[in-house]
Amino acid sequence: MKPMAGVYLRTILNCMAVALVASLLLYGCAGDERSGKGKKLYNHYCSHCHGESGQQGEGFNWDRMPDPRPKNLASNAEMSTFSDKEIFDTVYRDMRDTSDPKVLDDDNYFAVATMPTFKYTLSEEEIWDIVGHVRTLHGMSLTYDLLGRKKELEEAFQLAQQEMEAAKATYEAATEKAEAAQAAYEETLTDEQLDNYEPEDIELPEEAVFLAVNEKYENAKTALENFSKRPKKTRIARPDLTISEDDRVEQAKLGEHLYTAKYGCNGCHSLNDIGGLVGPALDRAGFRLNSTWVYQWVRNPQAMKKHTRMPNLGASDADARALTYYLDTLRAPIPEKPVPEPA
Image (cartoon, rainbow, N blue to C red):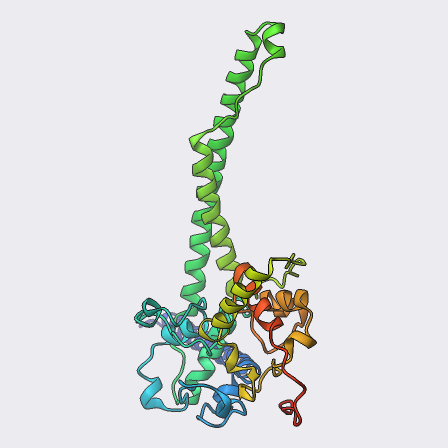
């Protein structure tokens, strides 16, 4: 080998080594930062039920929770049987009625109402940070391809945007053509005919296509935004909660069902000294809480109090109304020994 060729090769190898070390350091820093964020989020939103180290019975709320109680997140034997994605889906899901046999028989759904969703509270990336921290509690590490997931969302958004722009152009061209044809037709009418003329609404198949494609685009845009940003904390408008007394009774019954079977409120709140200690006891909610406030709180608690531990459960308008009517019925007498607030 010629001397200059040897020097050139060593220079290349040295540069590759420096690049590799820099990459490892950068990855390590990013991993440490992600782990730190995951631990902080876990301690704020999860540790009161799951315990700081993931051990059963450790969290201050654990003893007060109904069965099935939280899993032992520190158990490698149990937790290693779940993939990263399965743990993620437990935290990032829509709340469903767990009294429905179809929900209970769905192997792909975590049908435990007292485990809340954080889909509408945290970003997807933050939830992955929590999953990464949970993995450390039983001696494992996150292997899910987060960069690949972000790239997948970006590509889906770009494709949806291209489809939307093409459909929009086609729709606008069809609209322009139809309007020109209508204008040309109107030119053929006499003044007397124009006086009695009412143009028909133009219905174009291109409009239906555009609306469908635009919805796909908006969903892809929201999915990409929700990867790194928390869902928007939109203030909920004041509802009109006026209904007949008979309807109120029926809605309150539905709300009582939703309270335990779908949203698992009893996991964090107590009634008659039974239930969780994370949130306040609700025995006297009908006396203490304004119904309009209750509805707005249930729909989006973060819009009312930014750092509350209560997540946005994705409750629909109908469900939030039913829960509001139910909570208004809770009017127990003042207890002799009030349940103390958690430390």
